[in-house]
Length: 108
Length: 110
Image (cartoon, rainbow over all chains, first blue to last red; front, top):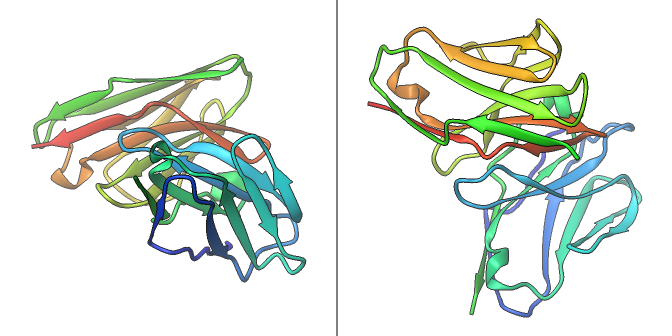
């Protein structure tokens, strides 16, 4: 079971790019890296998933180095509505337990 | 498209009372289904998952049980609630290692 480590909290200002890094030193060969976003009183929402190198969608980018022992979620030009908890997971879904995540607070 | 329904949205129950939370999924067949619990300010704890009718795996020994009487129905139950059962309960299904969550039930045990 790959354990993940990410910062407890981060602050940013509107319009800035935010990068949240997750460490997963014992990631297995078949594991994918998945990021979720959670607002208060809501279930987490899937943001992006990747295996290696770089993945980009309309919401975010995910950067994964060659050794896959870490990953970085990049949110371009954040707004106040991006204030949420962000979770990184790297295990098969049926073994998923979310850690405490990273509380991102976007300030005006 | 697939949708997941979970109810009720909020629930206040006395200690020792029974519990039944229901979750249904539409638009897919034979989904993997999950029950999670989130304590205030904490991460999500996986409680149960099911890969098919009548097949339940428990991740954490506790006061709760789960059942899957139909392909797209997942039920979380308790015979006698404890104060420590309070929390935000989420049902989810997965596709391609991605989880999709319901809107959750906020349970307060008093």
